[in-house]
Image (cartoon, rainbow, N blue to C red; front, side):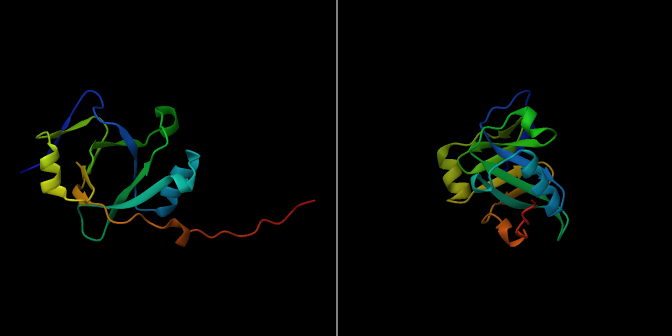
Length: 140
């Protein structure tokens, strides 16, 4: 079965997060910071490019309600099914039944995106390894 994305005039699936394009971790962290998201309420997944050893960007998932004002230029991610995440204003063709999802994806979660195809999400990134927290001196 070949899964494809078709452009659609409106979003058919619930929002589950957003995409940040670019291979710079600093850009990802700045996007999360600009939106004033609590780091304990998000999961960040790196996403590959179609080119070998190149990062396309990341997917940030959250249960926090995201508004277009809050997102700015970032593209929303939508849960097309329990195990499939797609970009905004897209629909999956052919439409998948629960049986299809179980047969195709098992227990795994995948992202289907026009810029890098179908990708299986592995564990989220632990950003605490990339952040340096220092004590801030008290100023009198």
